[in-house]
Image 1 (cartoon, helix red, strand yellow):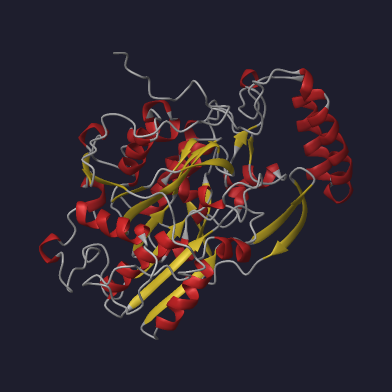
Image 2 (cartoon, helix red, strand yellow):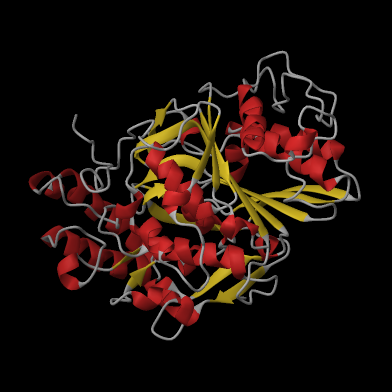
Length: 490
């Protein structure tokens, strides 16, 4: 179980920046009949994504001796027959609010398909493959799996499932929230959630929130008391889906994107989606820096009014208060904010957010060290691997409204922190300036990596060694000028 901590290999595959056409190849079959391919169906259209995932395993040296034969089993050391394998993509939302390509927002089904095939090979007919996530509260899950092709992928794969090898797709949320009028929660729909339930994982004094001075947190919803019930001076707890804790093997499949609240959303931030109830996750601390908060970058009059009205109208009196708040929001957005500095960032969407990253790092500790009962141990409790979908990346105002980048990348490895650091370097972000990554490196108890970033071993089909960025992703407005890798002058 210690392999991931000591594994310093990071694979970087550079190739085509396009996904298979779901109309031509709805289940994302490979276009080459590889010797190890376990099925018969082949696509007439080239599937370069499948090729890139396969190339990643080769470059990392997995089952090197049998490569090119029908017995090649690159995930055989990670996955054993009978294992419960959970694939965790980034299924944040079903649409791009600005109408731009959804491919830069969520993990694509073609990446998931390739990984599922090699998990299938490793399980040798016995075990379980579950694709699971708890996307944002307002995500329409049915539409989401339709736009990225996961629905037709699962129609295909469930025809292959047997009583000994189970294939499932799960929405891990407890509730679906319907937003209207600029982001006001208008309706709540109870969901089935995780069929295995949820377990409260008590990190308590081992949480990163222990070091936070101001604990006046705001979560994903208006009820601030609910969030402070789980994160306060005495305890810090998470509501983790049992599907996740039951995993013998956890494979993270995030999107290569920047993020308004934490800088980059890769493996560590992807762990937010293992938590079933969103109010267990502090998103920012109430107020401006002058008041010990990070909700706003500046302490303006309308920021103060907005916070008071949200608490009174949306938290205390939501049934009728939402109508009054919509009226205020219109006045604030279209009139008052026209007369203030453009550098006034709200909702924790800026580089000074000292809150959100703590949940992400905490949940990384959980996925590595919590057993099936949610009890933390000193040694890792499951095997971990990561493959980042960077075929089309997301820059600008990520994670929800990014601009697409034709990056053509598949990045992977066994250590989530090293893969995140490598990926940040690739897109031009200095990981030392990103609190989520810099603080993750310093961990001793529940360490995410025993290997230092400078000891990363790069494995690439192009010879890339991480010496310079491959891209310069545009950062969210609240992060510009704060975390970029400085260019070395000639």
